[in-house]
Picture 1: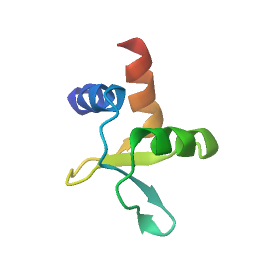
Picture 2: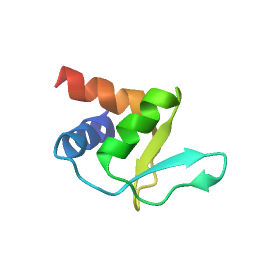
Picture 3: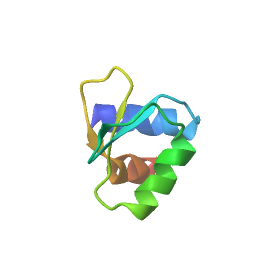
Length: 68
């Protein structure tokens, strides 16, 4: 839960450095607006931060943003 809350705070501040997992593997770092757009198109999108060992469903971070 701690990672989810930290990432939601970074997303609210429009921090760059987000990556996502796709059929082609891990993406190059993106900004949060790009992640939001991808999340709307692809249910079950998993995201991470550049250099992080954790992956979370994007919907968890979005939900934390809305609840915080």
